[in-house]
Image (cartoon, rainbow, N blue to C red; front, side, top):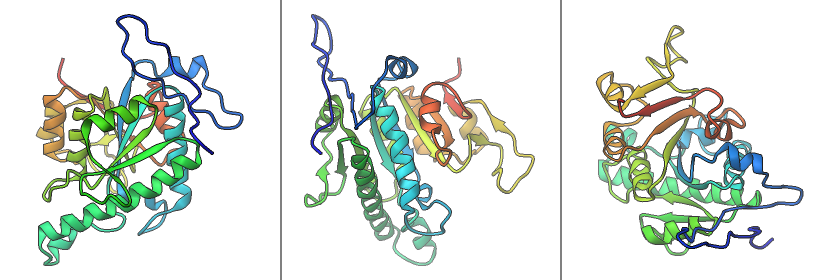
Length: 275
């Protein structure tokens, strides 16, 4: 199919040399309306749990769900936003769960990192079927299937209009993929970290188990930590707070939710610093 980018802006004095990531498939157009809808976001990181790729299953990968998520990412990318992703591996292997059954925690975490690479390759394939050039960068060296993670190279990929998927977490055991997402978002100088979950925001309790759980429209980082709300681990929340990185939590399973959140529409919870 070849590279689907259709052009770049000519830099003017004082302008950034950033290329606009405008993709086209047959019949697809990047409209002024789409660009205006997300004009407040230059670059974002989307964190997806491995479980989100299971669809209605209890294990593994649902190709239809992967394709739906890839379609939403493609929509946002076509609107001119630079997108990078971190994907968990819990649909295949969870190091913490294995450690609870007696496995060495570090070994379990490394196995979990490899699971994230599998998921990254699946999402890469789906994105490229949607006409979006995509690169997988791994924190663990495996040159046959992914590029090594190099910060400046990742930035350059996005400036050229490619989606970048960061795999293998931070490359270190004892760190979650949520922490990896906050770290990569800070390193990439993202405008926001979006977390796609199984529900449409942050609740006082799991709404799938507690019928009267309260959904929050806005929270501060300290609210999340003080209330022990299990949206992300404490290290990830603290890292986002230190870097003034807004976190937007939404339901990744709702078709079109990612583009909606980018437009400030739909249901989601925003986590920011106290004003």
